[in-house]
Length: 276
Image 1 (cartoon, rainbow, N blue to C red):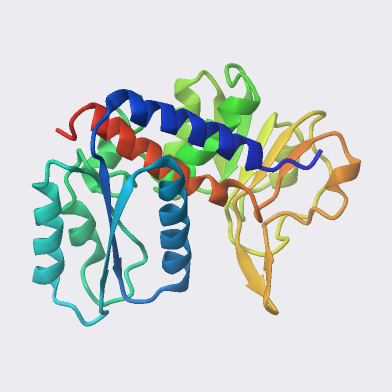
Image 2: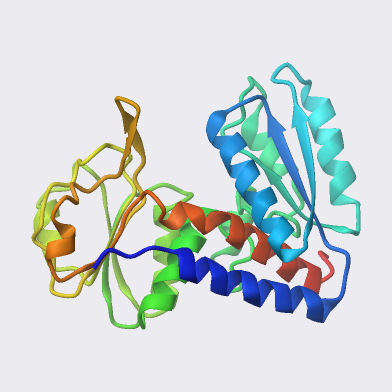
């Protein structure tokens, strides 16, 4: 079975509309883009589009790539102090020579809806509200929870980064799953894949995983993204996946479509807590 996220996104949006109506507050999200990175522009448009559907006001600030660090930090601090701004997101990678880590760490942890502040990453170890969690990891986790009970599941994550593999593993462990983290050079990778109830890959190399040998009824999620000859590919060579007994979510039209909605969910949750 080939999955898609269209119905799930609609369900999230309806819940967010209802929640926003319940808290009855003016909630704003500030988006900050430095330079003209194409993926950042695409994500920015997606967030603005989904925010309009839900009713969240978006302030979109674009800086030239030659902007000074002080100017960016000053703008972030201004939004940190604005009681009506419940979320701040700086698009990465920053298309500039500025210190990206310093800029991300200047975002108040109470408004860091993308979970990229260093303190937000530490918070994941002591809290399970997941408001300050890297977006792709959070979207994957929540989508999996909508598909199955995670307790007791054997999960293989083929990614070890701080923004996908590690936070996703921790959230899954908190749900009672048994998690292995692997990478493209892991020995016996296909054997591990064949024994896992859930397989998630975010290597970012076109069709690098070339196997049809999955556990019966396995859930397989492709987070990979690679462009070859102007075509987008995921990590899995999935040509025949509709003919085998698995649930496969491809990279195109997959988790990436949920990310904007998870950002907005975090903004509303911050609004419930007054962003303080």
